[in-house]
Structure formats: C-alpha cells, structure tokens
Image (cartoon, rainbow, N blue to C red):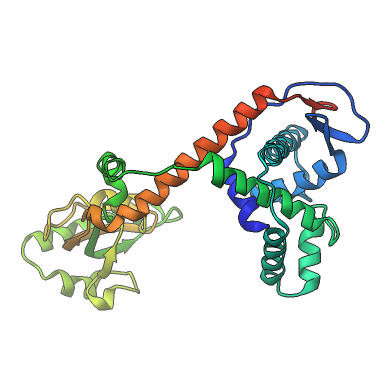
Amino acid sequence: MGMVRGCLLLLLLAASLPAGAQHAGDAVRVNGVGISSERADRFTLEYIARKGRDPRASLAPDARGKYRREALEQLVDEELLWQEAVRLKLAATKDQVDAAVARARADARTPDEFARRIERVGLTEATYPDHVRHQVSIQNLLERKVWKGLSVSDAEVHDWYVANPARFRTPEEIHARHILIPADGSTPADVRAHARRDAEQIRAALLGGADFEKLARERSKDASTAAKGGDLGWVAPGIMVPEFDAAAFPLPLGRISPVFETVYGFHVVRVDERRGREVTPEAKVREEIRTYLVGEKRRKAARAEVEALRDRAKIEFAAPP
C-alpha cells in the first residue's frame, strides 16, 4: 500500500472540484460512483498527518476545510484513474493483489500493527484487498499507458546539469582560529567598552607580528578553543553565527579580521585554510539527474492524464467541505 499510495501522492497535484447535487452519505460522486463521507473523513485525517500536522489537534476551520478539500480532490483523482484502468482492461490480477497484500503484511512487525495501520485509513482485513486492487490497477494504468515510452535523453541530462550548477558544487569550508573577549547583552556598557579595547589591542599585536596561537592560549576566553590556540577546525557556512560568517569567509588566507561583535562578545579571526566549492563532474551525477527528470516527467504526465479524465467526468460533491 505504502509504495503505490506514496507514489500517487507525489505525482498527483490537486485540482478544484465542481459543485454538484446532494447525495446522502456521499462526500463526492465520480461518474455516479460514490465516495462516502466516512471514507473521506478518515482519509482527511491521514492526509493531515502526511502534511506533518497532528490530525487530533485543533485546527482553524479554514485550515481543516482546506485539508479536507485537498484530500477529497486526491480521492477523486484516484477514482478517475481506477475507472480508466478498468475501462482499458488494466485492472490488477489476483496474483498482483495477493503479492501486494503480502508485501504490506511483511512491512508490519506484527499482525496487530498491520490491522492498526489499515484501520487508521478506514479499512479492514476484508476491505483492504479491494483497496490494494484499486492502487495496483492505477499503477498498471500509469506504467502501461501514461508513462509508456517516457524517457530522458543524455542531452536533457546535460542541459539540466549545465542549468543548475549550484546543485553540484560542494560548499566552501574554512579552517579558522579565533580569539574571544566575552561580552553579552547583560554586560554593562563600561565593561563592554573595555572588552572591545582588549580585542582591538590583541588585533594590533597580531598585525605587529605576534603569534596568533600563543595569544589565543593566553588571552582568549573561549574555553573550548583557547588551549588549542584558538583552533575552530573546519567550518561551513551557517555553522557559526551570521556575524562570524560575514567576517571570516571573505578573509584572504592568513589575514587578520577586524574586531567584530557577536552575541558571545568580541572576536578576532584568522583563516588558515580553505577548501570546497568543487564542482561534481557530470558523469558522477548523470544517472541521479536522469532519475529526477524521469520523476518530473512522470508527475506531469500523470497530472495531464487526470486533467483529461476530469474534463470528461461528472463530478458532484455533497457540500463544500
């Protein structure tokens, strides 16, 4: 269940449902086939959970209504695809259904866990195989009709690689040392001023040729680095506070930074080494790009198929969710 359902969730983008007539017990009818309100309610809870929200928590009425409508739209998409699979005689065989059910049972650690999983989406041991039959049939339709012949050429891979250079460049890292004279938001103004003067004196000594590591061991108040001569190790952007990145990353190797302030106090930094910003060769990522582009083509093709089916379908829902 998970593989097929997850695939559809990623592939099928929501579209709006037209208004229609009232149907007792049904949330929506697709070409005369009803999707019950109970099924829609249970699927909405599952849908909310997949969006990273707690379906049991209180949600604003507008937010809950939005999730319910999106869930209904997905149920409509799946019903349309199922009906098309049946029309084209691509419905799943008993062997396919049995194999998919067996895989789903094997994914659960115990029979009770499997029962709880299917119960959460409004299914039972008796109804689950029919649900799987729908999902596998949709997969048959996608693979044998919608995605048939779909491929990505080497030229397409190359063009995408060239158009997205930042995706294949390793982040720059610097090997830096610093000296810290502490001062935070609670430090009195006169003490803060004295701390800055100390940092400026240290910088002046460094510019005059003083040994950075020796001064760091003697003067830095950063307990984690002072004993190591101020050594911060290799640092990538975003690891330190923004003020550090702004001061350190533009520095030429061996240059002493101006004194700068962070929430920890006043710093002086030196960059000793720099690495990264290397571009991964196209040959190493070619198949990764191809897989991504195939997925994008599949998503668009599935969406186009659903839109075409919607154009020909009669879709009615009982009331705005």
